[in-house]
Amino acid sequence: MKRIYIYQKEGWPNFVWDYDLVSPLLLNIRYLQGQLIGKMSVFGFDFKNETHFSTLTNNIIKSSEIEGEYLNTDQVRSSVAKRLSMDVSGFIASERKVDAIVEITFDATNNASKALTKKRLFGWHKLLFEQEERDTKLSIGSFRKEEGGEMQVVSGALGKEKVHFQAPNWSVIDAEMDKFLNFINSKNDIDNILKAAIAHFWFVTIHPFDDGNGRISRAIADMLLARADNIPQRFYSMSSQIRIERKEYYNILEKTQKGDLDITNWIVWFLNCLERVFNQTDTNLNKLMFKSKFWENHKEVVFNERQTKMINLLFNDFDGKLTTSKWAKINKCSQDTALRDIKDLIEKSVLRKELEGGRSTNYELNALLLL
Image: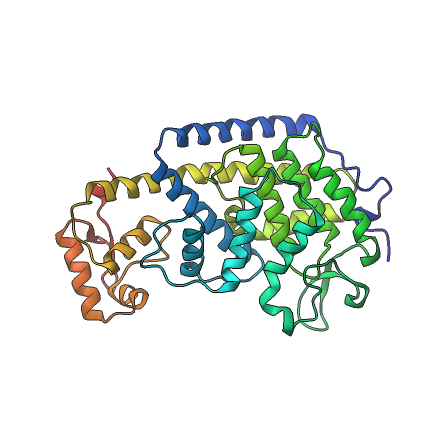
């Protein structure tokens, strides 16, 4: 194999970066982080817990979506709610596979200060794939083995594949991971936010597992970001933003993996992405504040289970326009029932008809609720 990948370069893995370029970006992230934590500090337990719940749910869903796996949103919400000891009445039951993925996130962020070890990584990997253990040739709960052959990241149809990256040989993984884990666990002068950027890239470049490397690399980054925050709750989701910028994410990874030991461009992209995360989080927090205010102002109003579910969905990122048909489909009820529910909410000034309707009538939250 030609020496085209970063891990083949002399000096690997002694990464370098342009301090003058990275330092102001890092300072800005620390400023935005402080603003967010300061803003959250004035809210009560219930609002913090709701924000924590929403953040974890989105982070788990979006990290899997980046890899093309779409988890059941309701099951993830149910599983996260159970882990947070929230009231789960009205939630659907979650499958063991979903619970296992949720468990990885909770271990990474709730136990962020604990050392990252091979045993811990093997445990995460087993949780990620335990439901497939009998039906797969993957090495589950262990690093790649010789029989797995070359590990390549490819795209394209069969016979027309494009190789984006070829990982280090299986025989060096153990030694490579020793260096990586020493970096993660050592008390050095590198800011944990910067460490998250480096660790994310480094781990996914070693590609130690047969599958799941991307999701585990993002769990490691979340762990280091949780260390940087130094608070028990999560209020922002890196994976949600990476999902939006998925194409750019894979492009910068590939370019950096084919470059030299100067990983400035990757770090700059990571920090800029994180800046966009904080900006979006501010918008999301406003939505959650409106939602919290709504329920406080309507605690004496009677809503049925379907209405409560849909109001919460509308305050979150509801997909598309709300119609009677969509209401009926989501709630598994008849069109007549859906229409009665909606008319009742209009009478209670919760919903209104959209001013610009097409062939079907669309509904939205009453704007007066958001004032």
